[in-house]
Image 1 (cartoon, rainbow, N blue to C red):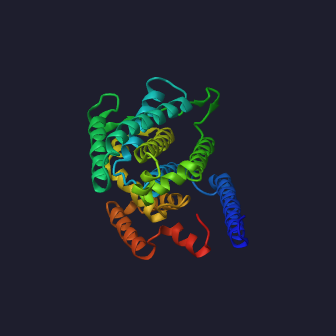
Image 2: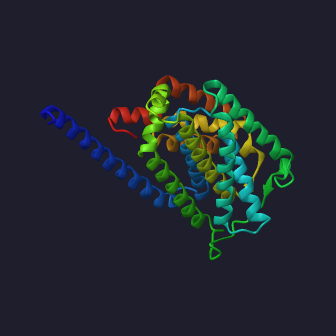
Length: 326
């Protein structure tokens, strides 16, 4: 028979889990409500850019924050999905949802190959291998005929969703992008709070102990790598439809650096941190564009300030003050 103190501790833990789940549901409701009214307040194209990069950052955070794997080459999956989606929509004439799925699948397939090659190493060696593989994708994109080289793939048609609904209007497309973002965010949330997510955290915190308990760490790391690459591909493919463009910027190493910056500024290892980080970085890029190359300097300064004052990221600090996991 369990003692009274044990029953009380178990009951307290269950109550905390229920309260946390209720709190997270409330946050999701607030996010959905904000997404509904946002296009009536802000420019829809700007909002779609924020959502695409927020999904990209959330995908990266799944790998780094919960898998403990630092990749310097996530732009490869984001960019190649963008190219495939743009090519499928413009040259093959596929409907936007099929083109996005084609780009997403390509990102996931590339993640499977690169992940299989990279997870055999750890730490800085893993990071450098992902960077090297991503640079191979960049040079491939520069030379391949279907990517358009330095010009990229321009004038990508938005087409009709399911062959019926025209998404030429920015506000109509915005709600589709918002739906894709919410789907990706909910999928990541479910992964994190599943037994799979708990094993990932165990491997992240103490891999030798997880292996000693019988878990095949490399299999779990490959799975989270592929899932992260697939969601990054979904973000890149969606961006190609939004901006009707796929370019070398999407596969450049600086894009990988930006997603790291978004994740760290917002809060690594938090569900909602990368969203805030993406919003901050994209807003800076748009409203400080008149500064030209100095935007990068300003971004660096803000990153330094965040590292010094908000080591847990903006949402990480907020979660500590609220005593609620975010």
